[in-house]
Every structure is written in C-alpha cells, then in structure tokens.
Image (cartoon, rainbow, N blue to C red; front, side):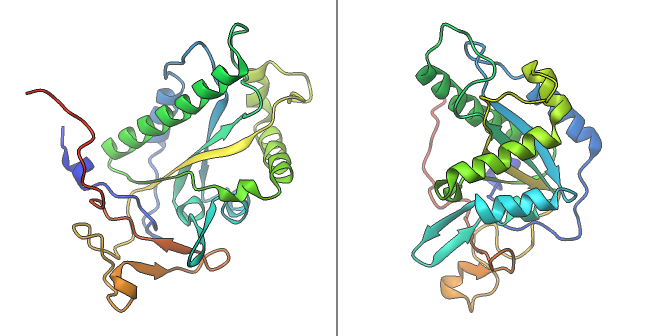
Length: 245
C-alpha cells in the first residue's frame, strides 16, 4: 500500500498527447469491478460506458453540448472529456430506473440511483489510482440545462444505436433494441490516462508559465477555445475522516 498515490493526487485538466496507451487487461479488470458492485434495494438507473480516442464524434458532442459551465470569465469546457486517452461515462436513466423493486417509490429510486453513481465513481477513482493512472472526474454539465429535451433525444439515440445488443440483454427489450420509456442522459465522467501534461508544479498547483494571471490559469485550444482551471491538490486541506488510534 502506497499512500503517495492519494497525497499526490490531483484533478488532471490535460493529459499527455503522446503517452496514451490503456492496458486492455486493466479495462477487463475494471469491467469486472463495475459489474460486481453492490446495489441498494436492487435499484439501478445507470449504465457505464467506456470511450477512447476512436469515439471522437460523441466525445466532441459531449464537450460542446454538455460538459461546460459559465463563470465570470466566460464558458469553461471540461477539456479531458474530449482529450483524455480513456473515459468511463455514466449514462443515467433519470426518468425511470431500469432495474428496480416495485415496492420502491420514484423518489427513493432517484435517491438510490444518485448514490450508486457517486459510489461507482469513487470505486473507479480508487482502482485507477491503484493501477497507476492519472485521473480527472467531472460532472460540470450545465449544458444539459439548455435544450434539454433535444440533448436527451440525441444521447438516447446514441445509446440505443451504439449499444443495441447490450441493452437488449440488460433491459430484456423488444426486437428494436430499446424501450420507449427509457431516456438516457450523460452523468459523471471519469477521465484517465497514463500521464498528465507536465505543465504545473504538483506541490503548489501553480503552472510553470508565471506570466499568466496569478500563475494559476492558462488557456488551451479545443472546442470553442475551451478555458480550464488548475486545481491544486491542497486548496482545501481540511481533514474529512477521523480514525481512532
């Protein structure tokens, strides 16, 4: 056990453009992990999909239409959603759980689904760090608030078209490979790769280009000239756990 993987952890905002290999055995292991996580009340309204460099079209749509937020300095896009070597994306079914007990209310189903999405993200983060990957997790998806119905329709069509056979098995659906009352929406994205871009000091969280404002900000070319911010590893150095000794 090496605690350095956690004390040195930071949210990666840009990954290496050259070192991008993801070990297939690691992916197989992570798939096994996700398929064996516990469920509360047999309720599930999330599916996790793996995207890599070959999935350019959907990843460009995600960063343009979903993973951004507006701030005082303009719109910030979550660049790793498009640029990371690999991402595990949570595809939620917010209107209806696809695996559930008839005894549970819709409110309870939604609460359990949100908990399961967060738990799965935590497991992925832990396992990816243990496998020596750099990781960035993002759910800054303000884009869903604009033209939500159209974006849900686009993503639902993508899921039903791309994963038709897999969804038939999961949902026990008809020959069309989909159910009329299941709608998909992008959830949290866990972005990872073997190497982060070497552009800032991990101890201070400062970029090396001190000419930038306060040495904490830089701009990268991407969709719509995306703006991103460095997140230092000890911005809020507050204990979150108590272990009796």
